[in-house]
Image (cartoon, rainbow, N blue to C red; front, side, top):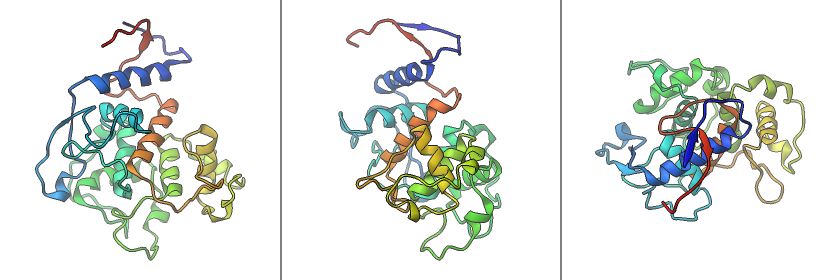
Length: 257
């Protein structure tokens, strides 16, 4: 049984909200659709939340994936989530816009202009354009020529790049600027880009991301869909967005169902 509450001063409200939405995600018939219908050319197929055939019970990121799926932040493709696929930059930005609850600000103009060298697939253009408008992306650094293969949008998102986008989505750029000169405790601290170090410090302080084996941050390492779902799920403790299909209250009892 759940008693609805409107008292937003409850210190445990984020924990309760996460639990409730997780319960709803695992039991509801909410439909999710493919992230890239415009780029695959395939028909869009619905899949019930909780029915990703490639996310097995007990999978390490299961609760994060189904919570964000119920909220509409992450989407599947024909009943699959593809948890181990690497995330592209355009996919990550799209998730960040949904995470920030900014979908209602998306432009319907398919000819929206993007900064120089920022090339993305048509489906993602409104999301990326809005991300620049909302300062989730830095125009100067993103449009600078990098010499990397592939378009900006289809490039694999690195751990340090994702960290910056996530911290910006939380509105904590000023904290990142203040922590930019502080060295991290990672063994590969010197490999973290100077422009990203402050964002890494803030993410670590908030517990959004951790290092990898050998006390390394692996700043240039790629991020999987399961990992990114975990990052955004943790970050929800620091925003006040009211997502669809989520409720807030006090759990006073649980039945077998």
